[in-house]
Image (cartoon, rainbow, N blue to C red):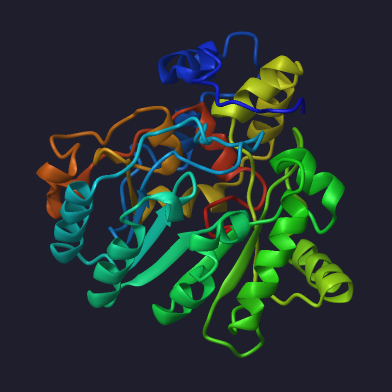
Length: 350
């Protein structure tokens, strides 16, 4: 992929417009696969219904210290959208009025939100399991973040960090020059306070996603390879590795179109459709919240600005019963979560 230095929005790229992305994704003329909804109808999974509301995934802002080439959020230093404390208060109210047991904080770099630590402390006081999607380099980006490992430990936060490969060349090609070296330093800091160690309750999980237009390899095999290489080369430990499929949204969609891989990638995803993965998609037990408090079926629908069906489209209108009965909005991009062994924010699903 070509070097990315700005977000699509800052570059005035037409794909910064979610409506333009949706238009491309839903135009299937000339392609040989069925529309995704038809695949789900064949499994009696359309309309797709929630199985419950167990996880609230909250995007606390699009600001990030990195500009990764595959980022479906189109995050970066030039993005200023950030969740306010007032909106965080609405999140807390929604959590109190539901059976949500896990809160998954994402961004951008969620730690860059000035109210991040306050929010974590409030969530911790509610006794919820907290996940932070940490890009690792933020820990060493500025001295004000150096104590993040200790802060994470204090609140027993599960840390989930993207590391595309166990070598610098491929990691830096996807996430930026010098990212691998900084990520190794951050992982060592996390290990030093007890994260990732065998038997430790301080969970440190890594995320792998392919560097091009292809599906990830087998998750267990990748995990074994990463564990061996990171231990031998850098004495780094971690618990699990999540293999995630790149969805054709935002910067990865731009890459697919620019390199003329879009149609073949969509065909590959559709041909690998797995009915078992279709039953286990993460949107069935998760609700996604945007930085400005709107509600979505998943992080990908959020980026396409496909708000929840029904009246409860914002935290102000939170209604657990209504949200639990909604129809989940589906599109061609959903093939990304149902291909092969399936894909979710927690790795494979089937």
